[in-house]
Length: 363
Length: 263
Image 1 (cartoon, each protein chain N blue to C red):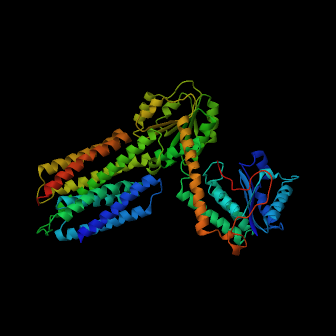
Image 2: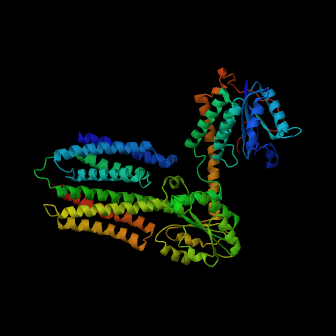
Image 3: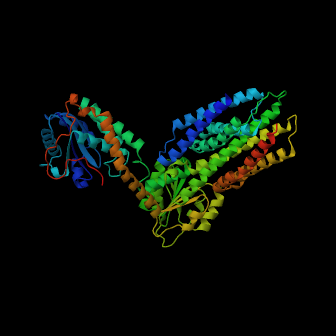
């Protein structure tokens, strides 16, 4: 008997291919039953997210399992045949290790992201409730949750933020602590400022003021975010009220100067001001950062922090893999023990064209 | 027995010191319960030792320079344990441990090497006891404000320079630090006010030097708190002032301590 994983993800196939194999949430229960009913399959878990579709299964043998699963996918998604080039075929310890890496966020598009952990948990929970898992996959997934927590706790794979928006939110947290008392102002209603402001709101910032040269656009964005719009000549007077300013106007020169911000700071009674300047050319004079309690970050500074965090996370991959290997070595993986019916040593995956049947690693 | 307890207590703070170095190097940014437990154990041993010495003296154990240092450390740790978590500044302990370790090591060595034999005082003035103990607590609050001030200045610099290193992730939000500095100063001022009021009720009136220095400390911190509250003194200036102003209670403490030594 074998543990197998047949999968497709963002590293093996483009979105136009992946989307053809995405299981809709409402059809997952039925799909689980259908896979479980395949003769070659004893237990199964289907993990279907925007970046991956993976079927984990305890099967009678790898070759028959992969063949049955491929046929099933073709049938289910009404395709003539699935192209094996887009899929990876993992067996035994490789399949287990792959799951552990996925649950730990090591195989994610945004390295180290934690959302996948919840998605793996949900996928397992659905399968468990559908009654299509038993001893082998139950143990395997419990191990994956343990390992994911271990990796998160003992490495820095989740440290820092890897996107400009989340860096801005993290910085706001390090300046204000609790964002629930913070008011945000957007000057220049661009897409990036909208995304950043939304992230801040989701972290508790309580209101938004939007100012834009086109008042209609400001009004539209303010309504979308449940905030209020002010005309472009009013934003200056609003500085004293707000804690975070996201600016992204298309002005050819700076619009916020040291004197202006310095004057507003006197009325803020020492409360910090966080300026996020994502405009190019910049909207805020660089020397504003010299003012007490004013923290200015332009797009390059934010991007550099995000890049550094990404680099730091990439450095952590080897450490995370070490944690996974040590876990497998020290604690053993129940599903690979002889009494579970699975061979402890690596089993050879059947040959498929295209992608190697190795655990997928980030570069 | 009291010296042995103090030695063990100092070793606990050495543990806290080592933890402080490790946490800042190993990049583990969760507050550790183990560190809190070590500090709490150190505090328990400290309290026990001070209780024994207090029993021997028949009064608050601040009869010589070394005892004053130990009592000052005890006040700092007490305030950290009471306020550190409430102010969401668990990391304050990481910075407090090294200071307490260094000061208490000196004090413990001094006590081991000295040959003072505590003798119960014939008559204890409760106002003096209240004055001394509450004033030391106030100084403990000022010491913690100084520590929080240092943390603020470091975090401010890291934020200004866009240098998001391990220390940055370990330090608390700058706004929390600013609030903690103000609250610690306010607590210190209230305690010192009580201490000074008690001094006026003592049987033996305090000397001019004593009164003058205490008043200087009191007015300096009161001015800081009032200016911050009413004139919106910037957080960075408040932090810098909390660090600089601590020189005053420190000098005062040393003068008082050397004043006491002949007794």
